[in-house]
Image (tube, rainbow, N blue to C red):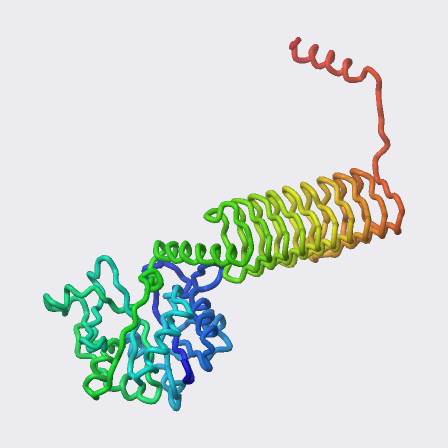
Length: 447
């Protein structure tokens, strides 16, 4: 691939089969909208320009694809009509123009690079990606000559008996010679049952103009177009397997890969161990030698080298876990920094806070960070020891090395190396329990 590359992403479809108020291409696969996957693939191809064709009233989609320019297809009159909606963006382009579909997020950059290279090789007018399904029924057939040149794309219902035997089918993805593209698309008519302008007719136009076309074969798994919730689930499964394999290839251990769910942007360091049933939401970065134990849920957080997380831990957006730190079972961390070597071992909530290096947070400790109107900050110094079942009412500061006795409610500043206790006086009444039981037996008649 040596010439300039531009990309047009078609995203104007209504997606009625999804039965959703959300535009179809905004539905997520591995935590990212499908259109985002397609745009990322274009970026991996080093496209100099990526344009997105949208439908009317799609402000959320326009925002999601920014800063890429968008063009509105006001009337949905077919795929060729959709591409021409971006005419102003196509004008004056040179090299290659790749047409992708925002509801087909599985094509790899390697596959698309092969398609572009094939178009360049003999200066073809059009290159088309094709695949070979077990049952080609319903797909347009790619007809090639003895030299492998693409001569026609024939819709299934228009195939003759010989063409119906062809199992080389159209994926929809096409690459055009940029200099001829607008003229080719403008020559397409709508003389068909639906009265629409089909991109597939570009091959016939090129042939009529004496220009050659070529088809490139791709694995069927990459060609899935998502039109329903079922197909969305299939796409999710395929992408998850790719992400798992990539993580393991880079040195992470997934004990039970099929039960680990990753996001498209999950970053796992080397010698990370991920136990079963862990979910990575978007925005998670994990350093080397981290252990993430079973049933943990992480999103928008950073975990330092050698940290130990879980089981049953929840790291929410803004959590930063330092090197060698420990976040144990039934602990929730939100918008808080847990510094190197600190321990929050069990049954705690730490939100809007800093936990200093090597501090220890006892079981049942919570930061009371919300007063009903504002989120307030808690600062726990290095080496501090917070006893079990303590409530730290923000805003509050615990100094370095300070000790908070178990069961305390802390509302003010605790100096470094100080001890603070807020326990009620212990009362013991000898024999009281026996007298109470006797009285209750008399009242209830129970022995």
